[in-house]
Length: 246
Image 1 (cartoon, rainbow, N blue to C red):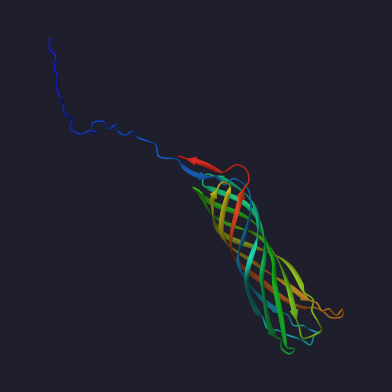
Image 2 (image 1 turned 90 degrees about the horizontal axis):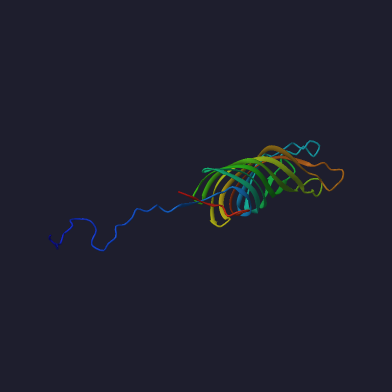
């Protein structure tokens, strides 16, 4: 029968008293679920360019004016409402918005024989109804949009013939396309930045009639392009839309 005592030296491995580290799972990546109804507001800057063609005013001294263009820029602001549906990273939706506008310009043009005609034109408001398609990752979404547009203009005219002219109003239909990016920054709140182009290229005849009952209007044909850059915020109704992705 024998009893032994000894000492060993272990080559490599952890130092004495240090517990080996255990493998661990990477932390979950938090993503945002964009599905649901939302409402919001926006403000921005826009520019408008319209082309005029005034017809020959037979019976009104045979007045003829050359075609001319008019440019304006100013602020826009309003609200939007929409709905998103997300499948994987793709988001599709429908959005409607209305913007009040401060887009006015004044242009004077010389006629062939009766002096200068001055047009003061204001864009009163625009509205759109668009479809959106976006690609989402984490808390971001990039999207494109396109659909129909409406706008309302007010035309003021100062003319050297047949008395004071009444303002004329026109509501016109067109189309719009755009692109933007949106970020969910706090709970159900998100901010967005986007570019919009609107075209109203179906020519509309505007006639500023005279305050004199026996005087005909002076017609002008015009079309319009609008470029707008907008910043906005949205509030998503319902549950806070965050999910974990592993």
